[in-house]
Image (cartoon, rainbow, N blue to C red; front, side, top):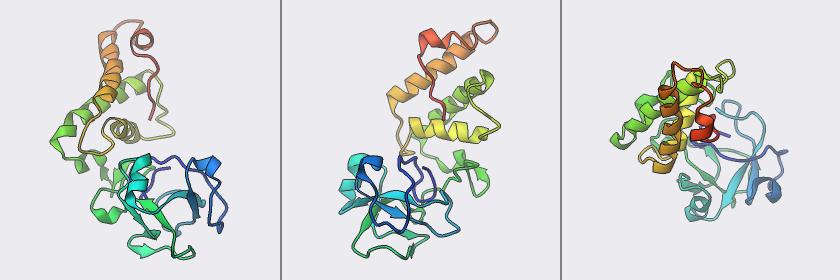
Length: 203
């Protein structure tokens, strides 16, 4: 799941509100079944949100969680949940961009303009090349998702914090781009990568 509840992808499960607890086996962690307001930019079904006592508990599962607090949306408490329960969050109020999970744009503008740290600029270019490979070799369904979502999904894999790049991930993604460029005018343009790079990640 990805939404303006969190700007990075979250593995979760749908559930039946107003249950207060989710099946731990389904989520891998203690979680609360939450139902967000109608204008929520994300799933329309209730979903499991990780329960926590402090932000360190959240960061154990993913360093990008930034808060452990009572469930809120747009700085307003979401009614109907036990006052003592807190959930991991990354609210848009912290000043980070909120990327639309359907269009992968921010307020109608391309997502790239909202990640300005010099350390991640090369990652954006790498992802553009990588998505050109995926699209040309028909590995990315442009009818189901926009090309912006291809590049944004790739970027989240390479630079999930938006301030630093995972070197190993970038090297892996670069392999496919390099293979595509090297074999662009040959019959191996969409097959050579299989022996050189393994299985491509499709955002």
